[in-house]
Length: 247
Image (tube, rainbow, N blue to C red; front, side, top):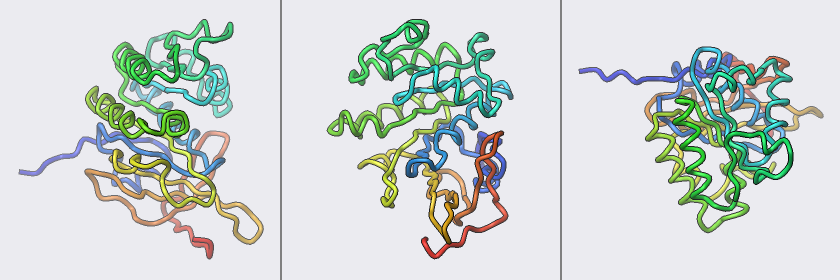
């Protein structure tokens, strides 16, 4: 008896080719890399591609004001306001603590950003009310900075909820420029998948590259590939292999 893996297509040009057709459903994937590598853009691209195909989604913002999130997405032509009005997209504000006029208009607000229980409750409510199939948490690194002792446990709790509610999720994890790990002890063990984005200097210019480090439930490409950030989002050149003396 053959077992068919249910996959979630990212619809990001070049990425599904690296993943043998898409991400296995319910996988929790770490999107990791240094500053400026495109982690947030990749994750927002993943959500928007789902939205325009009828898949509701939730974006959990721990590091940016929701107004900035909407503005940044709009620069790529990803206007999410219509989907918010239709109840298919939600931003969980885990940044402002509800302080400020704009924050008072947000529907999903974590009043105490240090309260992990509240954070998880608000995320769960947003997923259930939108019937979200895709979730992004930007970023779990914030948890490691503010609550290092309980961060691993928090990530495991998030994984149980995200997976249990049937979502396919991206957890953004920041690493320093020189760090070759994935951002925080225990993050990589909790994740079903790891996709690493890098920005390396070569011959006097910065070059972008991406590699699928691991992905449970599917075979995947093991090579590093170049990619670009365009005015329409991410494009991965899956038919080219990134070669650099830096690697």
